[in-house]
Length: 255
Image 1: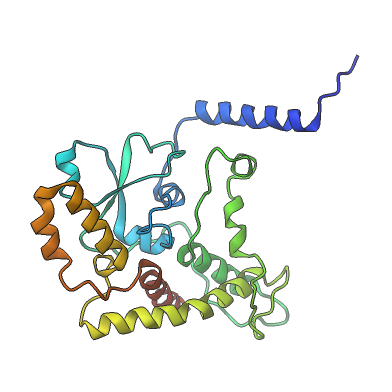
Image 2: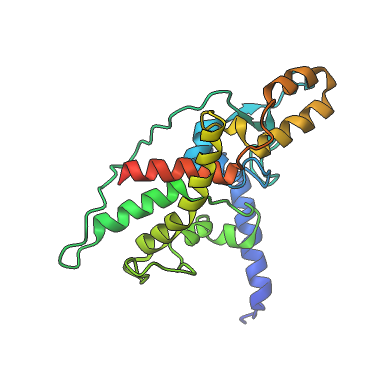
């Protein structure tokens, strides 16, 4: 005799089973997983994968004495390593070396063949557009672990006339519409940096200044050191605009 199970109850059972299987699976983490679960901290939430790889790395949690000497930011609570590791900000940027694929040049489509053009736009979108995993426990993520990447090929609100959106041109249309929008913010951030005769660095952003102030309030012994570090940062650019500046310049070099 067959027993009918309501669809909603069946879906809940399937999600519970996926959670159990996920918890029993050995933890597989890398820089991409760290980035996807970086959380909503203002310093990190608008970063692209490329900029995140320049400035952020994972370290084990230690005592408060260690925390007074570094800017440490927790991962998203649902991340497998959130209980044992935190995100540390580097003093100097590192140039990421991307392995595992060959970047095709964005050749102009000929005779309807757009493979290289779309592949180039897809790779640039992954590296230079902010993406985050909402929660490893959410129903959407359990059903499709890469569901949060759909924004990279979704139809833009204002598609460019020379890059129309369609199923066959989804990545290029979405990427070039995004690139067109961030170039204005990137130019504004660069002008601020040039007026101050400073290098483009995360340590000169408004979010970092606020982070250092909170750190000084929490650990008074580091107050004088931090005051020296953020002297002159009142007119800092934001992480979002600074990240846009880096992504814009890097993406131009890749084209």
